[in-house]
Image 1: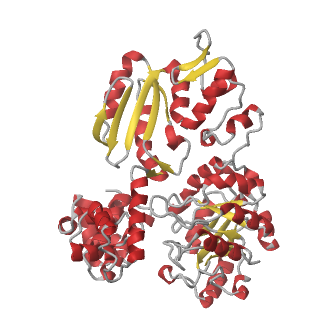
Image 2: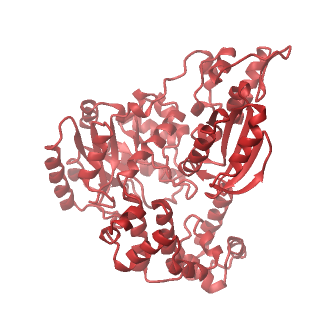
Image 3: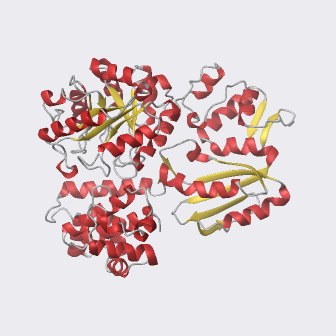
Length: 573
């Protein structure tokens, strides 16, 4: 059992306890343990073998014994019995945005509601409006949450899909009968959510059946939903569907291009090809006389059509074909262009690692600076820093910076934007930071005009350097604030405020669709992992993928600047 699996079980136990109305401290202990396990560099098996589990923060003897049982046997009677005592439909309800375990318990105890469909019927019949602690507004929000769930129920977060896809892809790629293989589909295009996994491979015709059998027999497979010699479909234990398509290797470039998509990009490309007397499909690129135009790779397909090679991330029919025809495609930002990492948390607030541990990890990645941004005082749930703690933290940072050469910890804060657009710290406190990330964490149900004005007021504060995760969205969980992002980008440009592209794969906020406009307006995008542990620093890769999707180049990304230049940018604020 790896740390992710263990963490998920501990999280589920916490949720089950909440649904049953158990002592909230007990539930909180399991949630904290889940986060602690996930933030550890060592796997649970190693921690158990070394007797280190009970030494971890927040894990006492009773919890340590349960974790040990889970890790060594793969089972836990306490968990099994708890799960059996709660109808499975109640667990499913926790996926409804804004409908927490306490409310789930209330409707279950009052009406005996055990499924989302029963809950929806009760709301439509207006049965929840009179329930204590609910009301008509809550009932409406529940219905909106159910609609949101229906809309996104077949989609998966980018990092979940990538985690599920990698072992499949590696197994196919390493198979001796496979000539070449690649992940295709929306995963290759770095979409923020993924419907399913597509893998394409080139093989000899006589080897197709063997490769397909190998694919459907992989240990990650939960069930087979279709099997043939050119296409097989499976359902993974992760709950994600995956397809493998096989073709003779000579056709590999065509199927890779076709099944990478997007459908809109492919349609636009077919239209261009038709005007040139060509036809492009998964079977090949053909002239009018049906003669195949031989292509060794995707780049050859684009060259044959008079285009520069279009990176997969840009294939969304947002003007990339015309720009490629004019040889003006941008040189997209690379992970290697990043010079420093901003907006991370430490044990001073709700992080799992100390400032020194986080800084050393960032330095080990080859970066020049690390921007610490623990929560501000109103975020009591995240141990937000009172002013005296800010002073204490800054003194520690000064002390740590004496140890570094060619590297610096920058003093930042993730300062809450209040409902009226004011900031959680006064200006005299904000002035003590090197930079300020202003973010929303509360009151996310505002209407568009009010929400937009709230953000505009915040970024007009002269101490704000970066607008953090603008909408506050959580992908597949909540929509976030309904902002007029074009107005916000315009005002950010006027006040020289950067906008964050939060690289946490649950957020990926700012939405990539607005990055191109920000680029045109000269607004820096800051790719920040919002890391609460050393492991969270790796999320930068997802952020860079989304930045590429938003047409961003190195020059458009704030933290590609050197330490000297980014310090100058912050000082100019």
